[in-house]
Amino acid sequence: MLWNNFYQIFGQMVVLAGAALLVLLLVTLILGRILIKQDKLIFPRVLIFTLDLLYGPFKKFSVIMGLDEKIVDQIGVEVRNKVNQKKFENIEPREKLLILPHCLRSLDCKAKLESSGLICNDCKKCVIGVLKEKGEKLGYKVFIIPGSTFLQKIAEKNKFKAVLGVACYQDLNLAMMKMASFSPQGVVLSRDGCIKTKVDIKAVLDKMGYPSPINTPEESLTPLSSCSKDHHRGPYKEF
Ligand code: SF4
Image (cartoon, rainbow, N blue to C red; front, side, top):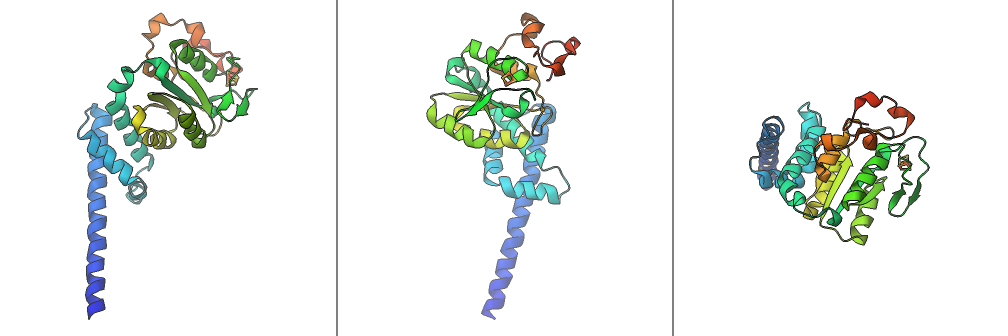
C-alpha cells in the first residue's frame, strides 16, 4: 500500500515535471521566435536562464516535437547578441578578442597549429587572413582555433573584457554561454562543417565596429584564394 502510494506520487511528479518542461520550452520558443522575426526582446534574462539551465532537455524536447534542435542554439545566440550588444560596443577593441574557427581556412593553408591555435601567416588565401588584418588594425587580439578546449586556454592566458566569435550555432551558443561574463557577441557560419565553411564578412566587420562598407575598399576584403575568383561579389559578401 505504502509502495503503491509512493509510485503514484512519483509518477505524478514526473508527469508534472515533463509538463513544466514542455511549457517552458514552448514559452522559450515563442519568445525566441518573436526576437528572431520581430527583433523584440522580451524577458531576455529569463530566456537566457532557462536556456542555460535546461539546454540538454530543451534540445531533446525539440527533436521529440519534430523541430530542428538547432532552434535552441539559434535562440541562445540571438538573445545573447541582443543582451550584450551595447556593453560590447562600449569596450575598446584592444580589450577584445576575435575568435575564428580554423574550418574557415583555405585548403592550401600552411599555417601551423600551436597551443594558442593556428598561427596564420597572413597569406590572405582565405577570409581568416582578411579578418585577422582588419581585427588587429583595430586592436583586437585574434585567435584561430580548432575547438573549444583552445578557447578555455586562451581565456586563462589573456586579459580581455569582451569577445567576438564566429562558429556554427551550437558551438557559438555553448561558447557564448561559457564566456557570459565577457559580453560575448557572435556571428554564425553561413555554411558550417569541418572544412570550407563560410561566413558573412560584413556581419563580422559590423560587429567588430567597422564603419559603413562604402568606406572599405573591395580589394582589402577579398581573399586571394582560387575560391574567390568571383570578385564581382563585392565587399562584405560571404566567403
Ligand atoms: S590567411 Fe588563411 S590560408 Fe593563409 S595562413 Fe592564414 S589561415 Fe591559412
